Length: 228
Image (tube, rainbow, N blue to C red):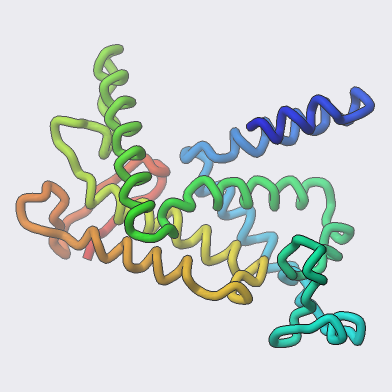
């Protein structure tokens, strides 16, 4: 947030500051889970009609400075990690660029699912605490408690499995393909699958499911989970 504030402070002229502010607000609002299906559908339509980021091509200059698997390596003083050139930016319409920014932020927003066990557990616990706090507020104003948000009936494992299966995995898989994340390895994918396996159903957990078990959740509301 401090970085965003710095951009707003130093952005000149005023019209640029307003544009940055509007962009940031739209990106943050797009992380609302109630908009997940709509956002992911738009993203899939867009990526199905366009090419992923252009893969880097080796050049004599980069080869003289050293390279790995054909990926240009910057000089030690550059202080940057080599990656795909951003030629795609000029090919995007403003709407497509905004969509890409929204999906990038949302992918980062659910990135706890792709972290290693210790970090994942810490953030998963915080997520469930946030869910339960929302459930408490819903009760206080007389609203039905949303699925997974009743602290008196904890469903941590089912909630986390559903979150990874229907929210995080499709989002990360699609965005990783778009930015050629495989160039950096598949650690995110291994972490996510290991985390998903942690939430295998156990008797007495409150999240056990049978092949006939169906749970309708509001994350997003239009998704019906059928746990096998």
